[in-house]
Image (cartoon, rainbow, N blue to C red; front, side):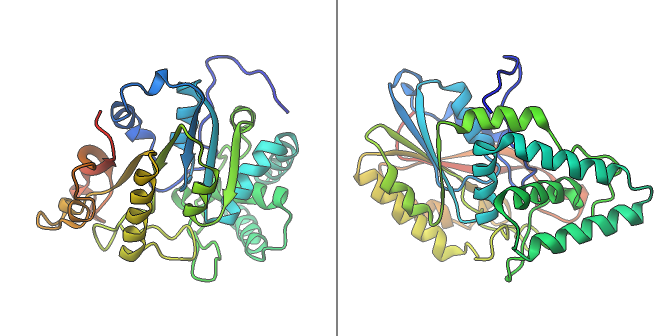
Amino acid sequence: MNVQLPETFHAKPFLKWAGGKSQLIPAIEASLPKDFKQRKSLSYFEPFIGSGAVMFWFLQRYPNIKHAVINDVNTDLTHAYITIKKQPASLIEALKSIQDNYYSLPTEENRRNFFLAKRDEFNKRLLNSLNNTAIMIFLNRTCFNGLYRVNSKNHFNVPFGKYDKPKICDTETIIADSNILQRVTILNGDYEDTLKHATENGFFYFDPPYKPISKTSSFNAYAKDIFNDEEQIRLKLFCDKLSKKGYQWLLSNSDPKNVNADDNFFDDLYAGESVYISRIKAKRIINSNSTKRGEINELLICNYKY
C-alpha cells in the first residue's frame, strides 16, 4: 500500500513514547558531520529505535540515505514496524474497528472495561502480529499519558487514561510511515547485531534507555530487561568497535550533572581524544514536583568533529 500523500504530510512516530527525541532534532542536525548531506549512498543505523522520531526525520531530510537498519529488543515494537511496513491497509481496518467500538461506549466505566479487556488480551501474547499491533496502538492512545511500560513478566501495566475520543486510527501517519519503511530493514534483537548489516558508508545514531538521573526519572521499562550501568559500559565498548572499523556514530543520553555536578559517569566513560561530548538543553521531567521541572542538559556524544 504505497499511497501518494500531499508533500506537506510527513512521516512521524505512530506511538507516543517516553523519551521521544523530536525536540532534540535541531541539536542532532547541528551535530552531524559537515559533509553529511553530500555523501552518496549513505546508510543509516538506529539500534534503539523506540518511537522512530529521529529515523523518520533522517529519512525525509536526507534523500542520500538509500537504506536504513533499525533494531529494538522490544518484540511488540519491532512487530509493529513490520506490520506498518507490510500490512498498512489491514492495520488501518483493524484500528478503525477498534476505534468505532471505543467511540460507541457511552460511559467512562464502559471505556475503562474495554481498555482493561484489550490490555488482558494483549498480555496473553496469543495474537498474530497484525492484531497485536492494533491493540498495542490502541493501548498507547488510551492509556495514562500515552506511556508504554512493561513489568518483569513483560506485561503491559499502564492504567486507563480517561480519554473520550482519542485518535486511535491515524490513517495518514500509517500510510506515510509505511512508505518510508519500504527502505528500512527491521531487526529484533541485541543492538550489536546491527553491525552485521553495516555498509561502508554507514552512520549510527544511538538513543539507548537513558541513565536515570533521579529516583523519579527511572523510566526505561519498555522492555523486561534493565539497561543498567553495566549495559551503558557495554554500549561504549560497542561504540569503540565501530570507531575502529571506521564508522561514525552519534549518541544521546541523560546528563547526571543535572542533579550532581560531581557525577562524571559519561565524561569519564567516553573520555578520549577522538570522542566529543556536548551538552544541550531539553525539556524533561526529572522531579515529581511540577515547580521543579524545566530545561535540563542532555548529552550528545560522537566520534567526529563537526
